Image (tube, rainbow, N blue to C red; front, side):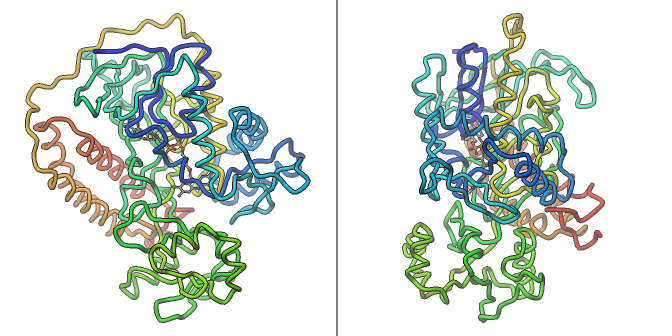
Length: 519
Ligand SMILES: Cc1cc2nc3c(=O)[nH]c(=O)nc-3n(C[C@H](O)[C@H](O)[C@H](O)COP(=O)(O)OP(=O)(O)OC[C@H]3O[C@@H](n4cnc5c(N)ncnc54)[C@H](O)[C@@H]3O)c2cc1C
């Protein structure tokens, strides 16, 4: 049975839920989300949300400067200003929805933390479980709202445009319009047409394109791939952020994050032979910026052929370690590592996508009636590298901008008739191994050739390997009954292609794009 709505929101992380809550009094909202509602990157965020609340001009200027510096001056300054200055409103909204942030002893001010790249304490947090608290509270609000319907275990397959009316749609031509999406009901195994006056893509990141990632399994770049197939503009895909210190625990996905705060507390990085190596790469040693540390570890691993280095905090008093990092201590114990006595094996892991769907300051994509918010969107905030804890803030600020803009002119919208999903010729169900093996191969070469350190030959090799997987996947897609793993593989192939091609087009080593062949 096909459906119609005013607002179709794809995803159920912070960006999606905060948008839905802001438009639900104006029209009907349907949220489709491919897993359970709270299975999103948002839930995993530990550090917090960078925000100068009710701040003095000087403090906001400092947040703006830190963001610009971290982004290698490639950020759009207007956007940076908009996000930093939008923080007070964003935190007000979150608090109204019930999110609790830790307060200072006096009980009247927020307890603020500081992270790498920030020159001041400005991170609001809820213990080290900020994302969990945010997701949990917003889900409560969404569930209560009579105008919001949540379709869990529903997978958005493709966006609807004039292409589905038999018209030619080109990326180079303006005027493409979005009318909703084809949605796969995973439980009942059927695809239906969900027409919407406004479609909002809030599908999060792409971490699973890589072998090792801190992202949960939902992060397969579906939004980027869908918008690209619909002929929208995708930019800055070469800027993929790797977190330097994820726990090395083969077989565990997502990788558990060992927070930067551990290095801030005095932990040092060592090779497997116990030698400190960061002094060779940066005067700040183990406290060097995130991208430098990730590159240095990558280099050490390429030289040694090993899979991990060590993070050593054993020289600090056990009591203090446990008091500062109770979660990390507990987690490591579960895999047999007592961090007060043992060094922690770590390796870099894909963490965050700075590029994505091009949007303007109202979160509008290059396709009409289509908005993108959260990690899937490239707003211009992050430039060539993201400042820690800026992404949650960006998600809320741009969700509000989208909400304000997307309610305009809603009543006058008339949706065209869209043909039903065509099942013809798709009756096979081939072995899963054909899909899982392709995913593994792709993750391997993306990690080794298109990861932290790149070169012309590595990118060319990756493209050649991807071409083979692309052809095999398209063949499978045409012959097979639609399934989530197959759609995700197809999307990850599309996303990998964009990362490789946009990396190849970069003329400089800048921010997160580092090539040994470029200055
Ligand atoms: C371990 C970790 C720690 C982090 N710590 C911080 C931090 O401290 N501070 C900070 O600012 N940022 C942090 N980040 C980044 C931040 O959490 C994310 O960038 C942010 O939560 C993204 O929110 P989102 O709403 O855009 O997407 P997500 O929260 O990832 O939600 C995406 C949603 O889209 C759904 N979806 C995807 N594809 C489809 C599809 N085809 N059909 C239907 N639904 C779909 C998913 O199921 C999910 O519900 C961290 C990230 C990780 C992984």
